[in-house]
Amino acid sequence: MQELTHYLNGEHVKGTSGRFADVMNPATGEVQAKCPLASKEELEQAVAYAAAAQPKWAATNPQRRARVLMKLVDLLNRDMDKLAEALSREHGKTLPDAAGDVQRGLEVVEYCIGAPHMLKGEFTDSAGPGIDMYSMRQALGVTAGITPFNFPAMIPMWMFAPAIACGNAFILKPSERDPSVPLMLAELAEEAGLPKGILQVVNGDKEAVDAILYNDVIQSVGFVGSTPIAEYIYGTGCAQGKRVQCFGGAKNHMIIMPDADMAQAADALIGAGYGAAGERCMAISVAVPVGDETADRLIEELVPRIEKLKVGPYTAGNDVDYGPVVTGAAKANIERLVQTGIDQGAKLVVDGRDFKLQGYEDGYFVGPHLFDHATKDMDIYQQEIFGPVLTCVRAQTYEEAIGLAMDHEYGNGTAIFTRDGDAARDFANRINVGMVGINVPIPVPLAYHTFGGWKKSVFGDLNQHGPDAFKFYTRTKTVTARWPSGIKEGGEFSIPVME
Ligand code: NAD
Image 1 (cartoon, rainbow, N blue to C red):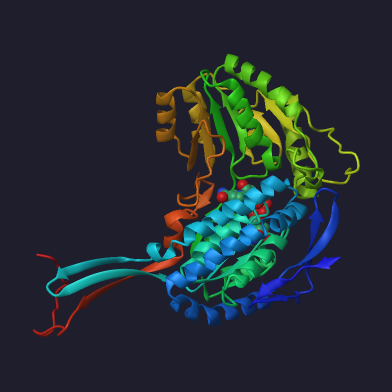
Image 2: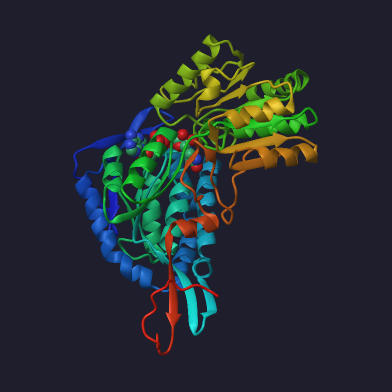
């Protein structure tokens, strides 16, 4: 049985708390490794290393820091297959999807190579007589991030790349369900030339998270995960005076207008609803066809596509569409919610409950499900299922459809499928959701834009990656300077104003 480690000050270090989490092989249901769960003391040790290393790193000129990221991009490409395999082994997603997970993180590392430009600051010449004014963006110091299981490469990179590009030290507390790739990323960053102590991995659970939240040296906390934990981390971290950004759960609606290309909409829904077994915060979990005729046509297109989906382990090759869900608990929760859908009166058009995979009977595979005629009051509509379950809620008008998405408590992503530019434009303008797709089912912005939802999908103001990340990981200092002789006329007692 492999015992995983922490990664502290450039070394793999065994856990000392005596507590471990099982890392499962989701395809077989077997325990494949033990993940150490850090104590407060272990987290404090990481903070001490980070605090010692960070001032020198912050004083390294930004171009040299960027060169480390350039090299990291090379190394990520070199090790792409290795990273993807390690990711699939613990998470369960297919190899091409795992490579996409690494790639989407790598693109943020690429973006952060522009740090020297992003950190240039502002300057006003002659803001007053003989006075210049300039602002600079300075590193926060020691920063930390807590990440979910579903993107164990991408989301850590979304956090640590801008954090270290800005001159911070970063402590990553990854998900205890798939911690191997985060450890590999820290090793690669060091191979790229990152000084020891600047990127460390502390594995753990709530105990390590609380140690982060209550640590006085840590200046900022980034979190991505479920909404109740996001809310807890935001409230606790802010109360401790930290800068905090938390990204939570989702229930993403896709509206299908009567004029949409129904085959195209169905293809989009298949990928967006069932890809990665539905374990994506940008998965489409609710389809809202407008009008019964649209709904009937959509269901007719969807059913044969769903019945053809190939579910299997990542080792079965590239024609597998999706793999197992991450744990037995996740599977049980999906099955429980499916049962509530049936009990509360939704029509289960495709029933994945009896799905079994020969040779993998103990794995956490879940067959694809499709509900039709679901309504607003049902649990399958209100709650995030995070599994291969697509729920169709029929609307009679466009207004009713947009109203559904607007009234839902989550607001991460959404999409509209239509050929009508006016409807699409109105939708993009009015919808209270952070990321919008127009005939695009999973509108995840690229690295140089920012990523973030609205409503209960986010706590905080700045988004992830793009220019917002440079704001989140720095603070502004503004200098007003008068040279060469300073105040000649004696003290000034009124607040300076421009006349
Ligand atoms: P999770 O909330 O269970 O765990 C996320 C992190 O929080 C992990 O590192 C975990 O160790 C830690 N954690 C768990 N329980 C905790 C507790 N009681 N106190 C403190 N820390 C705790 O989330 P998950 O199951 O790993 O990930 C799936 C969720 O993440 C879904 O809700 C999904 O929508 C969401 N997600 C959101 C985004 C986004 O950008 N909005 C992206 C990816 C995933």
